[in-house]
Amino acid sequence: MHSSRFIQKLDRPVLTAADVPYNARLVFNAGVTKYNGKYEMVFRNDYCGDDPYKLTGTNIGLATSDDGVQWSVAPQPCFVLEDAEIQRAYDPRLTVIDGVCYMCFAIDTLHGLRGGIAKTEDFAHFDVLSMSLPDNRNMVLFPEKIGGCYVRLERPMPVYSRRHRDRFDVWLSESPDLQFWGRHRLVCAVEDVPFANDKIGPAAPPVRTDKGWLTTFHAVELDTTRGKNGWEDRWQKSYTAGIMLLDLHDPSKVLGIHKEPLIACDLPYEEEDGFRKNVIFPGGMILEDDGTVKIYYGASDTVECMATADADDLVRLCLEN
Image (tube, rainbow, N blue to C red):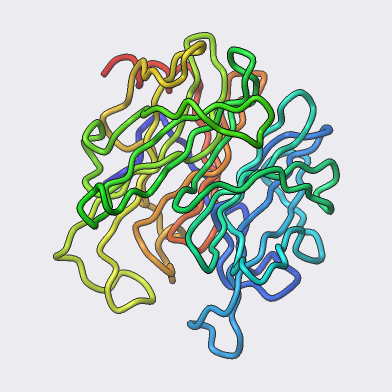
């Protein structure tokens, strides 16, 4: 698979483990936003001990930029949850609502996978507002209230009702206060995406356009004939990024979806020495004043990358299918 011709990638990653001033091995799946005049990035950092191919832990780091391309990493991780029930927090997403920065994140616990929401004013102190029931994650918040409520996209993982296999979809829920969530409804299912046969889920938080909410998602294809694709003996999945447009007033309604991947692994730096090759996972999307969209994505679960596109082009891709 190849990325859409409307996507322009940089000639290098924007962040790698070599840029991090503490123990780091895999730096990827970052959330990115503009906040108080700066670009802010919170990134997933998986680290190792003496064996560089044996991961021993995960934390969330912080990087800051003036232009969204050149990043400076803080001297230590910014977010680690200390609780006997929680094993790790990872895959952060950032959304600014009414001048307040919120971070969604995934949590591995002793009793299931959960999604959390925290708020911060300085990226040093986080107030955790809510954590979902298992099993649910890949949560992203819309950047404004809709119909008086906070709204999020999420990916529940209903193994029993899906006959004990992956078959996960994008759902939406609403909240009056970011703590209590309800009015759950399906937004987009695996069968709606021609380049997914395993699961789909939210990616970067949506951005508002005149035509609707421009929304990325991750799409997973399973091919059991694949063998070794990275560190593991066998990695049979490939992740690509898709794009869809949701209704401004009822974002559970899909106005259009592009029927081909928007971003796929097709450059050497997205593949070389990858932990799991053939993986693209967007976590941040910023709409600039000139109509350019910056999309930040993890590649092969190893490095953080960036691509740009014209927002109007992406809207047309969604509506012309």
